[in-house]
Length: 107
Image (tube, rainbow, N blue to C red; front, side, top):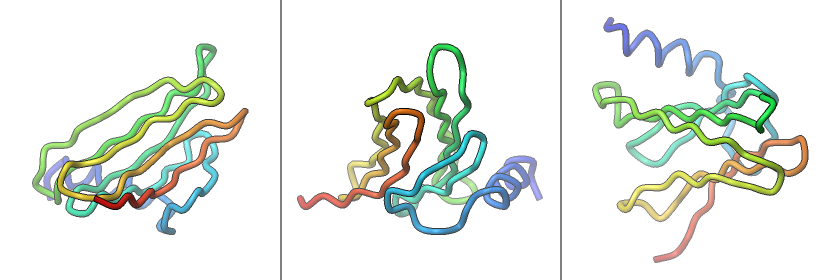
């Protein structure tokens, strides 16, 4: 098993395996995200300048992981999507809460 596979196995093991439909998230709690063939995990930490949201995704087990980091102030959001799919994953901050939601848009 490669180190990348082990990292993803640990990350997914820590993640909640429920589907993301406006689910609340706690700091450091991992949440699995799925964009079709691209999937991964998202979590956040509380820092002085805002909530640091970290999402790491890859295409299958052999794909190169991509890490996205965004600092969210209250009322802000970050959206992850691909051009091949009509869904997106939205990570938003409302006050002191962070929510992960799958959005489906029509083409």
